[in-house]
Amino acid sequence: MHAPKVVVEGLCKVFGSNPQQALDMLAAGATKDEVLKRTGQIVGVHNVSFDVREGEIFVLMGLSGSGKSTLIRLVNRLVDPSAGKVLIDGRDVAAARRSELTALRRKDMSMVFQSFALMPHRTVLSNASFGLEVAGVSRKERERRAMEVLEQVGLAPFAYKLPSELSGGMQQRVGLARALAVNPSLMIMDEAFSALDPLKRKEMQDVLLQLQKEHRRTIMFVSHDLEEALRIGNRIAIMEGGRLVQVGTPQDIIANPADDYVRAFFDGIDTSRYLTAGDLMQTGAVPIVSEIDAANVAATLNGSAGYAFVLDGQRKIRGFVTRDAIGNAAPSMRPIESIRRDASLDHVVARVVASPYALPVVDDHGCYCGSVDRAHILKAITRSRGSHV
Image 1 (cartoon, rainbow, N blue to C red):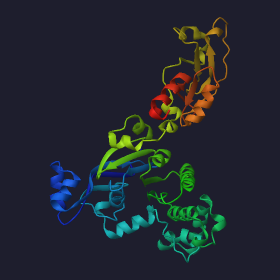
Image 2: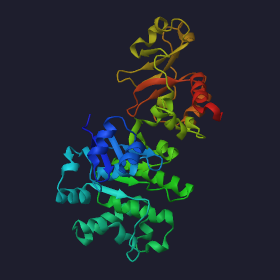
Image 3: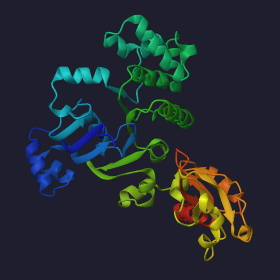
Image 4: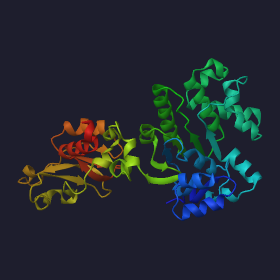
């Protein structure tokens, strides 16, 4: 297991002349509003701790004023903390000197904001290579790298156009390309797609997910939209009033919302769409036998089980054998389709409905990890759709 990319420990930010007074009041149990009323100081972030793993998209969510944008600015130290630590690759950003911070922001960290902030008189290519220019990379090399990234985000044909000749969605792609061109190990995206219309927004989420498949970067993504968080986040952190309320995978948060504030985000959302085969599978529901034991399957198929999955020495699925083959000297093994653990609900339903048997679920390496069947899927969908059925 890698060390986390980002570690945030006990992070606090109070905007005002006497942050310590506010921190003492908070420690004694005062709320953000009480601190404001009694001292005039604004609590941006209070006692927040979490870590971000290498290669994940970590989404920070919350309503306006929840502290998520302040938190992201504490991570790249556009804002200085009142207390606590931010470690990036083990280095404490909160204690770093200005020169270290500048180097970190140029080489290791990129930001993409809601406003595209493109330079109107520079071409798309020149905008995309700007970060590399600032870092002192030669013109030929920076244009080569920027061109590669424009290719990835589908903008190579527009390299010599000006931003004003592009649509809003395309301008946001240029902003994304500029951030990617420096090949950062950490990307911070603050409401990056929220100015776009719903169709363009989904398109940009798809671009991001595709890029993430090709090069796994660590991305901290700020959003106020739960659908967006569920679509792109490996894990989601939900903030309220400067505090961290809950951190977990989309499935954790759907299954066990921490409180009514978190639950309110799900109003009107059909959360079953975000379930995967891994969330729906059961372990131990179907007997398993090794290839060697397939002939002695009678001993395995006791009780009500009518069939068993056959696995090889690497736990890969070879097929299945049924109870009615038991009388034969060598029961014939039949092929069976596997479903990948990350397969979407739609894919799982289409496959399971067409099969009279439960289907095996396999991981990225093709190793068996559980099974899905009709009854179990129906139960899970009914539970997560709740009032939306």
